[in-house]
Length: 477
Ligand SMILES: [Zn+2]
Image (cartoon, rainbow, N blue to C red):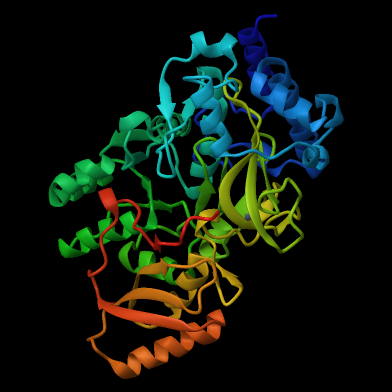
């Protein structure tokens, strides 16, 4: 059978088994996008292991990169019967991907060359952490990706008859807008593309147009970084208008209770602000309505489509329960550039449960997802910390704006140096003294805090994500 026919057969099987919903859009009163989200655990695990075996045998058969990687590690596809065996396979990362793509230009030896003629459009990574890497997809695989996104969007409150306003850019090979558009279509939600750049060109005109759409469509939905959503909310505030959004989706990092409060003060209509953590290559773990309303940061995983694991950084070994480690992803539905035990270079806390959630979903739930990039882990007096740890404490200090910058100048520093914005009058020795005491007692390390007035820290480049870590650490030998 030709490779493309194998993929088509796989997609057809996912549709028959129910992992990809076909009768769309769901009726608006349906509580879940796909009933498989509430399937008995045995069923979910059966599908997970079956799809895992499928992608591993596919990768070994068609991708020279994996054949070499696994042969060198002395593992054969047949050694992996299910999720519990994943630890036998090596974890690999973006640096290896870059090297492979440079040596086997342009797509790398990971690419399944039999499928290249079926790739209709080329995407690439943002390149924020180095030279951009390839993202190659065929429409059959994108169907499955759209299913995984549709589960998230539906859980968040997207329903037929609504509209979505997109702020992400599709320029420079970015893939997110197209995926969100096709997922929105599955739910019956109309898509309008504004982009951050379009908004910034004239925020007032943009906001007024958003209000107009809100008069016609319900629910009106948007997704972006918390920082952009706050800036957008303040624009409506400035105009004396109520933001028209019924569903507001922040994403990309955990939400502190303070951040949720700030969003709540700007957006009155949404029931909660369900969070999401994921990557464009992989799956998206999403917060259910129950968790969002309680601010719990539980993240549900669609284990029939992809799996995450937390490993000890730099090894393939699973992290102990409750330990922080490196987040590794295996995706069951990319046949062009298979992704098996790929490091996302994010840090996660290895704490999850498969007990049914109050929302009714039976999928695995991460209970304390954490906070940011592996490269942002830093040490103060031998104590490992992350920007997220600092952000949580900053959120407890009255009148901070949640804008801050951490300065790293050594691999094990004597004290934490941080610049923090506040809306208080400055200088304010008493306030600064109290805040420093809170930071030091909560973080357990000495802190040198510099206070700056609201608006003093640089705004997010392109209006999207601000620079929270200024890393001046010497290169490691
Ligand atoms: Zn739930």
